[in-house]
Every structure is written in C-alpha cells, then in structure tokens.
Length: 488
Image 1: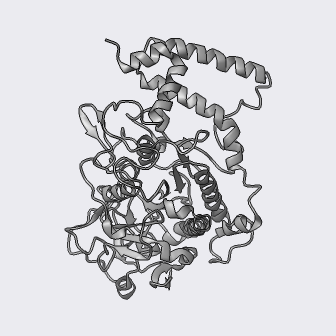
Image 2: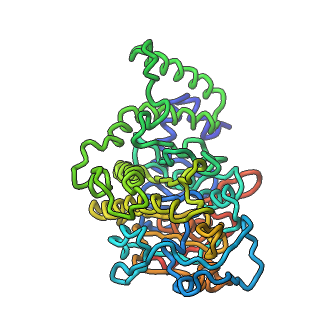
Image 3: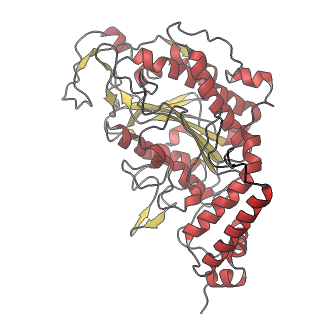
C-alpha cells in the first residue's frame, strides 16, 4: 500500500513533489505527521496577539542594578562590607563592599519608571515597557547561561527560540528567511552559531546571519568579486544541474527532511538575491528616520568619558534593519550587543570597570532600542510585534576590584513590550540589594519568558513538541508558565 509520501514523490517527483507538498501543507490539506503545530494564518492553539518577535541580547551579563533595577539601599550602604547572610558562590574571587549604581536614576513616563541616565533614551518609551526584575538563571557560566536564554537548555544540541517560532508558525514571506540574526559586528558571543542553530529541527529553520553595514552583509549570497568567470548563463546552468541531481537523489529517498531543507535553502537563497539587498538598503529611508536611529552622524551629548556616537551607529543600524525586515515578513529577528573577545571589553562582562564597559554599549543599545520601539509604534507594527530584552545573567550588587561587578545568576532583569504586553508595569521585584528575588519561593525563570512569548504568538508552549531520541522536546523543556500579569 502506497503512503501519502509515496504518492507525492512518485506522482510529482523531486522538487515538483516538494512544491506540491508545500502548497498543500500551507493550505492545511495534508494529514498530520506528528504533534500539532500552529498555522501560519493565525495559530492552531488560540488566537494570537503577536506575529513577530525582536530579541535584543546583551552578551556578557548586563548589570540590572546599574541600568533598570534601582536600589536605594545600595546608595545608602555604598562602601560598607557586603553581607549576604549566606555563602555566595561567585564566579571569581574577591567580592568587595556594596557598590552603588554607577549612574544616577531618574523617573520616566506616567508611572515614574526609574531608569539609569546611561539608558535615558528609553525614557521616551518607558510607558511601553514591562519589566521582570526577579528572573533567575541556573549557572554563572557564560556559555551555559547564554544557551539557556537562547534555546531553553544550558547545554548544546537544542534549537534556538527563533528556530522554534519558525518551525511552529512558518514564514510570513516567500523571499526572506523566517529567522534572521544580526550579530555584533566585532564577533560572536559565547557558543557562536549554536545560539541560533536548528539542532534536531529541519535545517531551514536555523537563523540566517546578516551583518548590516558590512561590505558583505550576507556571506555567499553572490559570487565572489574575484570570480569574473561566473556568468549569468553559467550560474543558471549550475543551478539547473543541482536541480537535476536533487531530483534524482530525492526520488529514491522520500521523506528525507535533510534534503528537503537543503533544497528549500537553495531556493530561498535564489529569491534572496533580489529581496535581501533591497531590505538592507537604508539609502531611501527619510532623514528623520535616520536621525531617530542615530544614523545622522551627529555628536552625542552623553558623558564625555565615552563616545556614544560609534555604539549608537552600530546598534541603531541593526535596529533599523530589523524594522525593515519585520515589515517585509521576517518573523523573528535576534539582535546581539557585545562579542566574546577584545579589550577594553566590548561586551557586557564588566569584571574590571562597569562604567567604562557598560557606558558606550548601554547608551548605544538604549538609543537604538528606543528608536525601534518608537518606529514600530509609528508604523503600527508594535501592536503585533514583541520586543524582548535579555542577557544571560545580571551582576552582583557588591564590587569587584573596586569598579567592576561579578556574575549574578541569582537575579536579573528582562523587559518586554508590544504585541499583547501591558506597558508600564513591573512583575516580580528583586530584594533590597538586587541580589535575589524578593520572594525566593516564586522567582521567574527563562521558561516563563519563553512560554509567555509563545502564548502571545498563539502557541501553547506545552504542545509545540518534536519527538527526538525518544523524548517529546519543546522550547520550555518540562517547565514554564505564562506570566498573565504582563498581558493586556
């Protein structure tokens, strides 16, 4: 007895069969092959409030107590011996006295949200933001903490969050990837590409890396400029040959998802040759939009000890490209700030000097993120786009070496806005020092953040599963609950 797949492959064959299957699948005319997945047209589990996500990731461990989580007690006890009331297992030795916030805090928005002056640009959109101050991690190790935030597991081998969203909801466009990653231009963070790898999901769901502003934003999209011998006719002949080889190979291996993914990737790459350059071209953006994102190359007005212009340009450019990708149908965009190498540090791992290291990065991030949120609101996209700000862990309320702070996986901050998120609210306070959650029995975990984002996209996080090695795997492992207090 022939199976459905046999029929498709033997009647359509090769790429024709794949195309037919894709069309039938998009219209929900194929029988289910495993766990139920949401539909691209609205969500199988429940009605969605959001269609797309931007994840802003601060690599290295951003200091919540210096940016977002104001602690007057640290100001009061500055310089006094830090007494935690328990043994503290620090990442490095040498926990010093209590250290007050490195910048002053001021209230912003209707709710009087306290924000550090180094992230003052976010004050303009403070009423859109929902803060979670009692987030806890599982480790003070960068690689593991980063994987936990990006994949839901603190070890390699699991799909990134954007991969799950791509797998569950499919694409909103035909010509651009569903999941795009904009890394720090200086290099990759801990784990490198493992943070957006598709792992056991089909390969077409992995993140596509783009470097806005670089000479070659997307590697291998076009022939190398030295390859003068590549002509349009020769390129077409090569593609035709690959197509014939794929058809021959696929006809004898029905249901091989690896080949399906490779073929889809080649087809997408061909379409991207037209769509991607247009999406990345900022030259037609009006002057007021470039100014909003800090791309008018004016001089910054912040602390003379740092140069905010450079970092504002870097992060603002990625944020503007993100908006252009979102409005063209990219469903998940991940923007990274900070890399894993270099000194003075150009990441958020401020063991030696928080003010020196956080200053340029924080001001550039806040300028770009505020512009992105304001621009999404202006265009109406914020109504169904979630913006998630995160990092692998926070930093200790005590000093390290006088000016730095050690890792703090015991408590740190995330914030969200847009797409069904209630603005101007705070969920889960930290204790008086920002060391641990105020209620240590009910912290917020990354699984809860992930579950909430999936819920807003119309996905029940317990139902989006893939059978792998005998286990029904999901983004939230066996944990997580939706944070209802954050929802509109």
